[in-house]
Image (cartoon, rainbow, N blue to C red; front, side, top):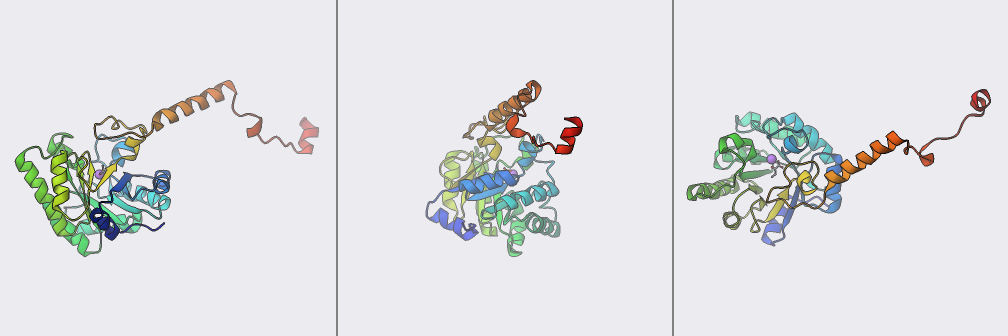
Length: 278
Ligand code: KIV
Ligand code: NA
């Protein structure tokens, strides 16, 4: 199949064809997501939480993102791949921002980058787009600012915050972003924002009025993630339990000698060895 383009994604919004996005962080997760028919893969800095075991996304480095994006790019050669720019790799001066985004695309192999922030980073977004780098915005709950926001809370509940979010979405569209992630926002506000701009809004915990949905791989699979119990996550399998049980059985088999069995062993014995030690 052919890899989708940002033009295809904008057309999907016009056609009310919902866009499916899932995170992936390595070769097998990317390969399985592509085989399952996902529209877009996001190499999220959520890898800090679900793959590297950090409490927040703040410790994730550009090298972490490049390393994981390379594996994803090998596993999903026909899927549009967006990779997150980590904390403090953008909004720190035009040249550094451009270099960091270029690294993610050239060394990682992503087709686009995602940045957290609205009007405040719009000039960065415009510069990236001008340089030929497709940019996805990310507003609402922005996990890289968790300490500034005072926790992982639903955003846009006050009038002034809702107005700011609408302005941020418009600023990102104006700056040339091809899409926006809207995280942890009430359904009415998310619907209003989706209707107010022409670029696709991909929601996570943002209700049914968005143009697409994104969730975290480990969350929907219950793959050892502490996040799948969140209200906005739907789980589609319990891979964590499956894996733990399988490893338990393996340990038991090794201890009891039930593994290896006849079928797993190489039984042929050279004749000379046979006659010497047979
Ligand atoms: O890092 C991530 O996985 C994300 C999505 C949750 C949007 O940014
Ligand atoms: Na992220």
